[in-house]
Length: 242
Image (cartoon, rainbow, N blue to C red; front, side):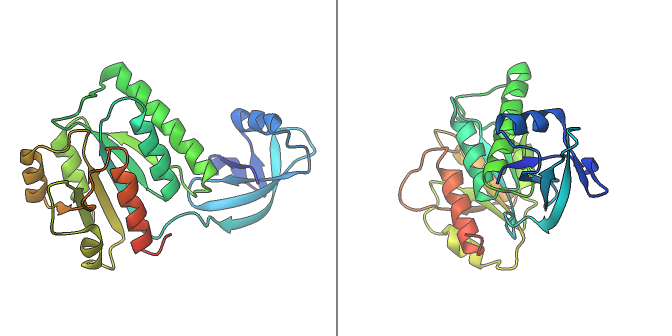
């Protein structure tokens, strides 16, 4: 069933008032009057709607139910800036897998360091990719894509999670599974993933001093766009969300 996100303020009195973009999309999909589709308020509630015969861009709400696509843990993925379309891959796959937010940040070995107008343009595109991925994967929210302009600010935010995990290729002892098992009741998790060349030792030391837990994802070296997706998949499996 086609799925759309609309503002909660557009849902009232048993009627969904569609914005122009959604109404146009319905036309493209050839949804006719009387046919059903789903809208989500972006706050975890789905509304099964039937396109009104009035032709006024509204739809009658015929059923309301909680979204089934939201995980029981809130995971924020912190990913270092990377070149090309790699950030787009990270956003798309992490939204599909259930990330609550995706945050990009600069690191010493980053090849790409967008700023100014270029960064705003990229961030807008990443947010649109998040929206489309949320629709496709039947999420109950549209995860936000944010940017930190400083490494230490990103570390400080990541450290606030109940389980703040630092994905580090030089960590050889503590695995992600063991780190998760040490705090089984945690509801907030952060995954901090590096750039193409990995983290500088000084960055890893700073992250550890700030409270992040260094973990390994195994003996293989993963690409920068693969590591956060791999870690998020493992977290979702470990918490019963996959």
